[in-house]
Image (cartoon, rainbow, N blue to C red; front, side, top):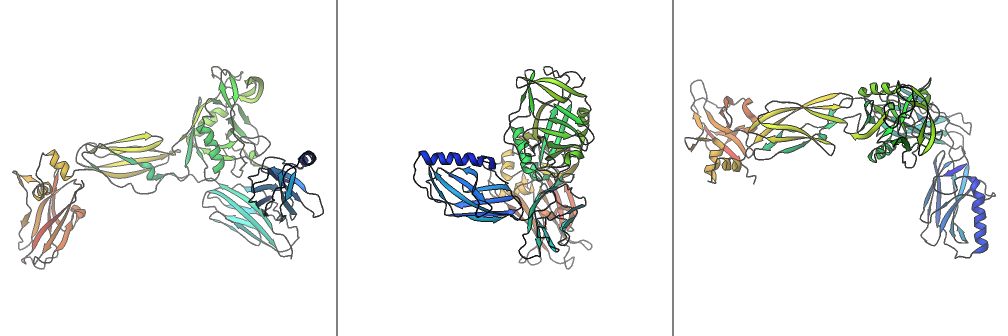
Length: 618
C-alpha cells in the first residue's frame, strides 16, 4: 500500500468516496476542459519512497488528482487530491520490485483531463532496521541483510556517505570501524545482484552519533588588546575565541528539586532539537510538572512537558504538528528524549529523562533521544526518580482524570495549589554552552577588567585607568565543569595628540613630536647620546623610547660612510635583542643602549641615527 504525505485521501478506503463525488459532478455540472500537465516523472530513489513531479504551465484547473495502478489492464486508484499549485508529491510504502504507473488528473468542475503516464519500479529492500545505535569513538559493526528477490549468489554492497572511521566490505555487506565524527548520516545502502534483470536493493540507514564529551577549546588566540587612555572602554567578544566541541545548544531546567542542565544533540538530531527549542522560546514549559515516573526492568524514566499548572488544575500544553521519530541514540542514564504514543511519529512537546539505562526503550521503533544531562545534573535526576508514585485523580482541562505513576513526595494526592508535594518545572531556558570567568589581572591599576552578559552573550569590558600593560587570564568552563585557561595582554596607550592635550602643549610640527618621542628635560627635548668606543667596547647609542605609544615607531640605524644605512634595531625587537647592552624603564619611557655587533674594528668610524615614524591617527 502507498500513502501520501499531502492532505486528502491517504488510504485506499477513501477511493470510492472520491469516485462517487466525481460522478455526481459529472451528472450535475458542465465546465471547460482543463489543459493537462505536459509531462510527469515518477521515481523510486530507495525502497519505500516514491516521488512524482509534473510540469503544467496552465492555470485552468481547480485541483489535481494523483492516481496509480500496478497493472496496465487494472483500474486506476486515486491516492490523493492536490491543490492547483502543487507540482510534486511524495509517497511512502510499496512492495519490492513492483512497478507503479502514475498519472495526474487536471480537474475543473466536471472537466477532467489526464497527463501522460510515468512508471517507477520500486527497488528491492533490505531486511535490517533503518537505524543503528552507534557511539563516537567506540567500535561499531553492522551487517546488511539484502532481501535478494532474484536469489542471486553474488551480491556487491555499498554504503555512502559513511562517517569518518567506518568502512564497508563490498562482499559481505558488513560495516565496521570506529566513528571519528559526530552528526547525522543519512546513509544510502545498495546491494547489486549478478543475475541479469535483477533489481538492486536500495534503502536508507540512519546513523545518529552524539558528540564525545570533551573540554572547551581555543579556536583562535585572543590578540593582545590595545586601548587608548582617553577611550571610555572597549568590548572583547569571547564567543569569537572559544568553542565547546560537544555542546552548541544547551538548556537549563529549573525545578523545585534543583536545576538540571542539558546538552542538545543539534548535529545528530537537528529537527527534534529545533522543535524543542521552539517550545522553549514560546515558554511552553513554564510552570509545568513531572506527571509520570516509571521504573521497571526495561526502563527508568521521569516525564514532563505535557501539562502546565494553573489555578489548581492541569492544562494540556499547546502543541504544533508532531515530529518524525528519529531513533538511533541509546536511552542511557541522563539522556533526554521525546515522549510519544504507540505511533512512532506522534511526539509533540512531551519529554522524558532516563534516570537509569533504559534498554527496553531501544527496541522496535525506539524513541527520539536528543540530549544528555550535564554530569552535575545527575543527582537532581536521582532525587526526582526516587520520589514515590501512585495513581491520583487530577483536573486536566476542566475534567477529572486519573494519572498513573504520578510522583508525590509524601505518597498522597498531589497538592496542585501549594505545589508542596509535587515536582514542578518552573521554566526551561536556553543558556550559553560556555561560561567565562576572569581568573586574574596582573596589575589592576592599569585597566578595569569586567565581565558583562548582554542578550545572552558574554563579553569582557576593558576600561583604561593609566598607561601601562597588564596580563589577564580568562577561564572558559563548559556545562560539565571542564575548562581551559587563556592569557592575553591589555595595553593602555597614548597618542601624540592625547599627550599634547594632557600637557597643554599647543605647538605643532616636528619639535613637539620630538619632545613627545624622546621626552623633555629642563624644558628641552632630550637628545640621544653617543657612547664612544674604547679598546674593549664598541661605540653605542643611548636614547629614551616612549612606552605605551600608539603612534610612534623607532628604528636605529648605523653607517660607516653616511651614505649606506643599516637597521640594527626596531621597536619590536625590545630589550631581548642581542644589540641591546643596557635597558632601564620608568612609567613613561625606557632608556635603551644599542650597539652594532658587526663593527669591523673598534676604532673604525661609525655613525648612528634614529628614525621615528609618527603616524597621525586623527
